[in-house]
Image (cartoon, rainbow, N blue to C red; front, side, top):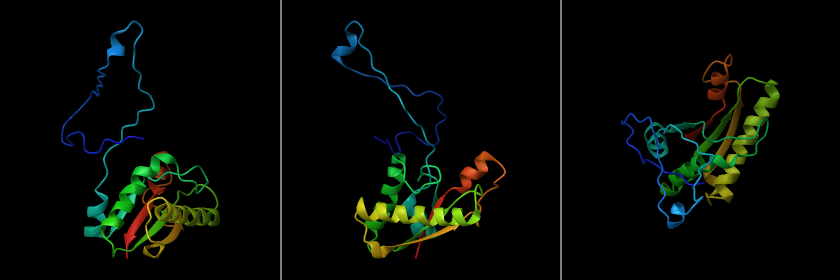
Amino acid sequence: MKRISRALDAAAALNTLAFTAISPDFNQKGGAFFLGNIQLAVGAADTRNKLISEGKFTTRGILFDVNSASILPQSYGSLKDIAKVLQENASMRVQIVGHTDSDGNDDANLDLSKRRAAAIKESLITVFKVDASRVETDGKGESQPADSNDTTSGKANNRRVEVVRL
């Protein structure tokens, strides 16, 4: 997955996204280029600044299969950002805290949030070579909602990961 970070002016009001392809094959009869599976996302707060200045960073960019601790591939960017902060700050230790929405059993949600935090730690260790001693995990299940669990968007806001500087 290619990611274009900070390619657009955050203050600009844009309503069109255009792509241009320059290729000799394009001018041939039947030549065409197609783009698919494009996702545009609103930029989030800078991970490094949040962790260093506030001591805590909350992300909804680490996604999992439903009722699973399997991290989805589109989470790579968020994981990489966390790893980069840890790599740039060799003495920093963090705690990864998983949260869920209120769907399902309380005990199952608590267990799921802990397994998801552990999966993130494992990814930071194996993929990004972060020392295991620098990362702790915890899960809060549905016990600390950030939003109402009465709406779909509220539930989505409650499914989050917090990275807390220790």
